[in-house]
Length: 115
Image 1 (spheres, one colour):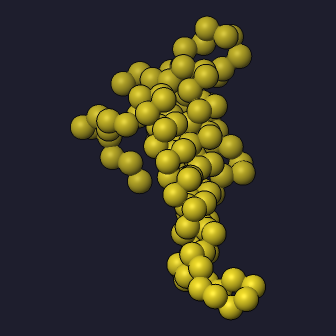
Image 2 (cartoon, one colour; image 1 turned 180 degrees about the horizontal axis):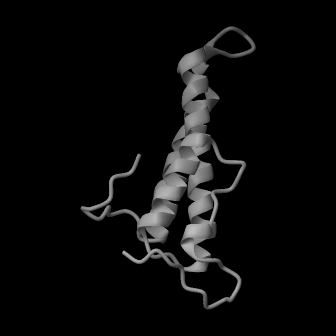
């Protein structure tokens, strides 16, 4: 696969010089870089990819919180309720899947191994 991004807008550098956004977690940066290095992306796809990486981070943050506090917590009156992070995790997973499909990454080429 080519390692360059269409430069039709004139402001997007070659793929090799793109850096993952600094606000992403280490894992999301690795994933972001793997995608950029292994797919031909148009400039607008970089923004979508970044949003997908942010959704990955949000999903992982929610998963960590659920692991620490449990899937069921107590409400203000002491009654059991589903942890609100369960909905956050689900929403982030759906958002990530949608964004991945949006830029055509829902099928991994056979020669690409993602971290």
